[in-house]
Image 1 (cartoon, helix red, strand yellow):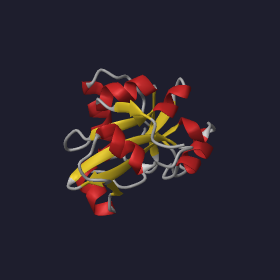
Image 2 (tube, rainbow, N blue to C red; image 1 turned 90 degrees about the vertical axis):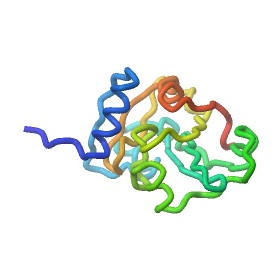
Image 3 (tube, rainbow, N blue to C red; image 1 turned 30 degrees about the vertical axis):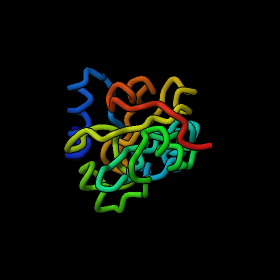
Image 4 (cartoon, rainbow, N blue to C red; image 1 turned 60 degrees about the vertical axis):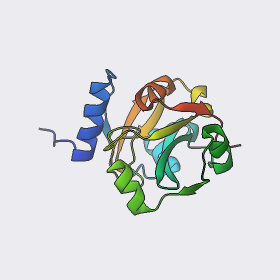
Length: 160
């Protein structure tokens, strides 16, 4: 008998289902907290990991789904979204308040309210990418197109 999914992963599964996206959340023994750890656990390229990073523009949280091989250059996101206030990295408390999830397990969906989102153009180099699914030990395989659909995100360049 399998154990039930953690509550945060259940919320992600419900959001995927509500959006009509069929995807199986996988729970791994190894941590997926970083892109390198996730790629190692999955046996895929680090560029296939869709890292979910939360930033703040003033009081507004902004989610950046970036390829695991990139470091986000906030100036690029500032320009892309035409933000009034420059981005800064969200604190762990701000991440949890915005997403209901802890750093290292932030999914693209399943948040208390939708977040303004940018999807890294580099993710489109892969047919399938892997995003966290609410916990540091859960992932969900998606297409880059599904990431955009689910988040209503803007596609752009976020790093070199």
